[in-house]
Length: 369
Image (tube, rainbow, N blue to C red; front, side, top):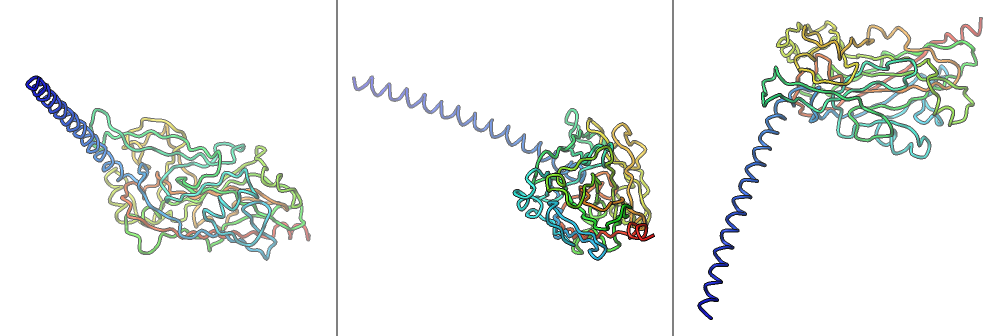
């Protein structure tokens, strides 16, 4: 009996050893497969992260964002359509958390993790109160061919169905109260004190992104000054929405941007404005080489010229605003199709944003006459 027991124990020991060896070989193969997958993923990431427009690793934080109006002319602003003043500070608290009670159905967007390039041509029709914003999930390749010339992308439209703290861009409703007593509307302007500036310590890499920032505004609609909060907050387009896109650094191009643009046959000159062709529809796949603004390979099935105003247009009114409360929606984003954000490896930077509005006294003058 002892001999049989010893033999059984020995057989069990051999079987256990073989089983352990099999498990170990399986783990080794599994770990090897995981390692291969990680290497492949890292290879893909290291390729597409150099394209700012298609990257998700950028770190452009908004350090300060202030909006100011000239109160002496009877103009004030508000984030909730209830409390009006001459200035508002834009941050995650004022846009998202503080509005839960006063403006529960707002759809404001904040970029807690930093701005990441997207693309927009504004609104598509006079009944659209929001910008069409497009994003990409990165560059892919056919048949493991990671030649940059053969990388392709697809894009999708971003929806704004509710408040969001971790968006790719900033968007919020801004209400103007204009007290004139006049039946004639006043003209609303961006004041020359408006600026969007990258911090001075930012690298040349990041300065290109600073030159790619856009400010967008949609004028939605107006109600009387004594209208209830629900009417103010929920005013719609009624076929009269209009939008503008402001490009504050349209003529600034870094040497690095000029060098990178030349690789795509684009002659970029510092001091001269260069047109941007932004996304107008979602879809794909589109070869990366067919996405570059100004390139002869640009696929016009997906892109159209982005009509922007610049510092040269600040003498021209943005919109007309009547006596009453006018609802607008404001956007701040990095335009990925801007030639200055063609290729960027982010090392972090901060933006300082100051938006100043003023109005003329057209309403007063016409009323006095």
